[in-house]
Image (tube, rainbow, N blue to C red):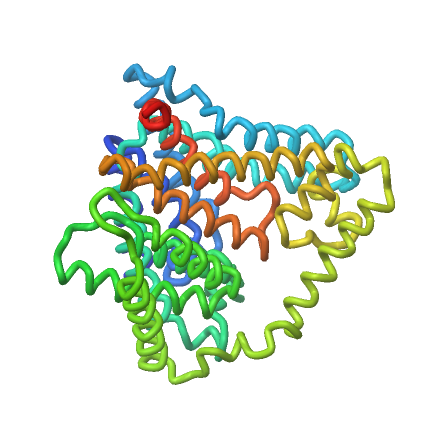
Length: 425
């Protein structure tokens, strides 16, 4: 039943995306965690995971064609200059397969190609109209919050004491291990949108937002420490930034909101599981996972420094697998090691450029009183969340970072005339 409900929700989001393309961004951010619920509850999809991809990505392609044929192709195909550098980085990664030291790079790239096409190209071009992005935050908060509660209440026993690691029973027997990072990311998206998104000003809505934010916080904490820290940092950074109609979560309001989320998360956790909430965070500095990641990054950078031939363009995307048997779990280190100074410069420049321009627009909301600019704050918070998570476990060719970065870029393009006008005052 849960899997069927998720498919119905995905269908509703696809229908809504026809007129409000921004909702497609919410669909993609929730896709992998929702897909896991479908696979856990419906054995058919556990064995045929790509079928869920077809059911979602196929209609998104049809929506793209529909909007292009209705006269929006010129704007959809126009790439914002803020996003162009990141696409150049993707192009360099694709080009680097020509000199990559990993003989299996074509198989690896082939598996990722459909996701890259949808997350980094198709949906970012749909977002050119920026319609529905504010609504997308509400979809993420409510649907993500509901899925977080389902994960916690229905699938906690299979996780062990400290981490939500799901397994799906296959029709042919055996089990399929699922990725906890997708679940943790969903929790982080839920926290960010529930706290920073625009919602109706009703007390019951505020209470529900705290509930889903608490659920998201617990899911992130039990799935991936990086996603928990990403959510807290994103909310802590953007929460105090004023909006057009409020002074932001400053002073007592910020403390009260954070306390409510933490207390609500603790109550929800202990009420459902009666386990040690902080078990994965004791002695994190000497934790095996943390130390292994440090060693991975060190090996990749050491190889890069000792081989001058890789300094400019690297050893090729995914070459770390052939050289070391792993990738460094850090987007920036991987960009430098596999795509050299050129790749790392494009990666860093695109992130910094979009973030700084977007932050300037977010700060303008309170000065100009323009409510339309309020959409910028949660967009940048999601991008920051994706960036921090990428630094712990991401690939340099990161589809979540690309999607959130392109969303912010399309909003910057939309508000560019307003930004330039305000600077002239």
